[in-house]
Length: 504
Ligand SMILES: *[C@@H]1O[C@H](CO)[C@@H](O)[C@H](O)[C@H]1NC(C)=O
Ligand SMILES: *[C@@H]1O[C@H](CO)[C@@H](O)[C@H](O)[C@H]1NC(C)=O
Ligand SMILES: *[C@@H]1O[C@H](CO)[C@@H](O)[C@H](O)[C@H]1NC(C)=O
Image 1 (cartoon, rainbow, N blue to C red):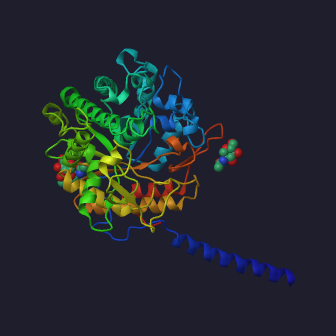
Image 2 (cartoon, helix red, strand yellow; image 1 turned 120 degrees about the vertical axis):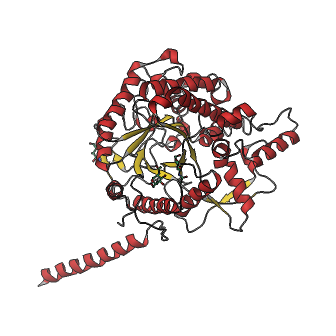
């Protein structure tokens, strides 16, 4: 009798706790996009993939003839700049374990895989005179195995990991970079272009130019804000256009692929209906590169040219820190993108900051804006990442309206946490953002692909291994570095199979 009532109590207690935890999970949805526009299903020509980058997953930093990249030297020389003093020397070790990544890709049933090529792995000095066949063999193996498993390769030419040898020449502040990049791109088209049909030249230029050459907290750690960061963006634009024009002239006829660039952007909202502040913010971020390439008129956004020419004059300079592109480059850059690659993670509120804040000169000071969040937005492990799915829908509509409905490939979107396998937050984020993309598609936005960041947990730059974005957990302490599917992997697989934003 005594024993019986004890059991009953346990059962009652269990049911109570169980009901409570289920309600708690439902109530804790980090964000939702409730409004739906049109069809529930993605068009049949819409495709789904996942994304990674060489330095974040490959390891093998000094094997088989690979040269150094600025991320090798940065992490080795400045471990204090990485939260857990870690680096990508070994990491998930995809250089030796591509089979494990492939197994995950096959399990997900992705249509394509976006990965990046390590420039110093195939051209150790950055120059074609230093061609490393073993590096080329590695990427041939990756590309061939993807294709034989029905997965399309999408290649980013450089994802932050500039060859150290080119950084020694001034990196993106030396215009000779344009020539090196053009020859590197030529090497890629020549070796892989028979099988790779979607090329991304650069990944997130703002994010390596402004912190890398302006505020000095990203390699190559140059502190010349408002000057070298603007030079870096201009060199990037020109090098991108050079690689694009080379493809059109020399390879398009036989290879028939597409070349674009990946730009990261938030959407900006105003609490006070200040459309000028929103436009200023969008032009200074997405517009900085997208306007010269994708607008009908080309060139930098007018507001940037006007501000920076005027500020440079006030500073007593002999020439402006940024000026309108001259007609040869203007025309080479204008239209030099078959698609706009978009990395979207989060949004902000914006208003004008007057008088301007920030050091003189700097991008911050030129843009004179301040940013805010909504207290209702839920934050990820990353301090900058709030879940704002409507921002993605509104950003895609903004691109549709400002850039002649250019084809958009969402090249990254994702959520960070501690790395738990039961990642219901990532599922909420994914579901809400897929609904945002579907709403945009149903509103006539020319979006053709969605790519989730990332396939596997990996080296998250200055955050080291403290923030995890993977659909697959990687056991970094085990000898085999197993890739283990999180709940979000199972969810995404069902989305891909049905092309529908399914409820979970
Ligand atoms: C979408 O982009 C593709 C590829 O650039 C283009 O051919 C097509 O016309 C665009 N669609 C619309 C509706 O603008
Ligand atoms: C997908 O198909 C639709 C309908 O046929 C078409 O309007 C759209 O341009 C296509 N998108 C791409 C990227 O090919
Ligand atoms: C990771 O691998 C280690 C060593 O094999 C093992 O002890 C540990 O349980 C694994 N962790 C997970 C979460 O699988």
